[in-house]
Amino acid sequence: NAGVTQTPKFQVLKTGQSMTLQCAQDMNHNSMYWYRQDPGMGLRLIYYSASEGTTDKGEVPNGYNVSRLNKREFSLRLESAAPSQTSVYFCASLGVGRGTSGRGADTQYFGPGTRLTVL
Amino acid sequence: AQSVAQPEDQVNVAEGNPLTVKCTYSVSGNPYLFWYVQYPNRGLQFLLKYITGDNLVKGSYGFEAEFNKSQTSFHLKKPSALVSDSALYFCAVRDRGSNTGKLIFGQGTTLQVKP
Image (tube, rainbow over all chains, first blue to last red; front, side, top):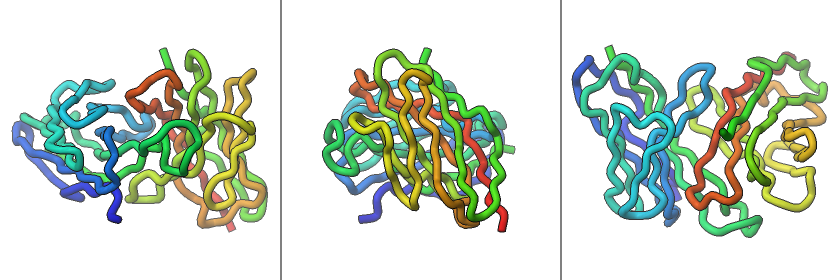
């Protein structure tokens, strides 16, 4: 069980370039999330997908697009990268179930992150 | 609007001493509350959560947290700190009535445990 995986681990882009961050989970979770982490600001939600075939904006969606390719995969695309998008990006998926049943229920599990620098 | 506050950017503790990392929240209704830990250059790891029931929640690595509804707080505690506990800690809250699972995070507190 690999959990949540992300590729690439590191990326350097020039302003205006595009790229896609990949995320996959093997826990059969329905909901998946993309966050960015900036110093002193915690994690902020970019987009999320409550279930396969649906996506919704989070707190900071501008400059990003997402695709929920299937139940396992949720990608984040930067169409025209800007220096303000320099950040660490985390993907997460949500454990199934409600309430206290099972350790995984109601808990988000995170990937190792992608460190992106836009010059 | 929902929010989470971690009032200390950094907490310094000597090894063997008790530690507390503070968290307060502002959410309508009764929230779900979480603590995560992030070691350098790693993703976030789940520590513990409060969903319902006993206000004192025990989690991984000897950590515990107490839900205090009247003070809207969920402070993280450990009786005896280890140097290996040094990391970045995040408190997070989720609206109990939401079916999206979205989390609101605090800004994080760096815990430094010195030998």
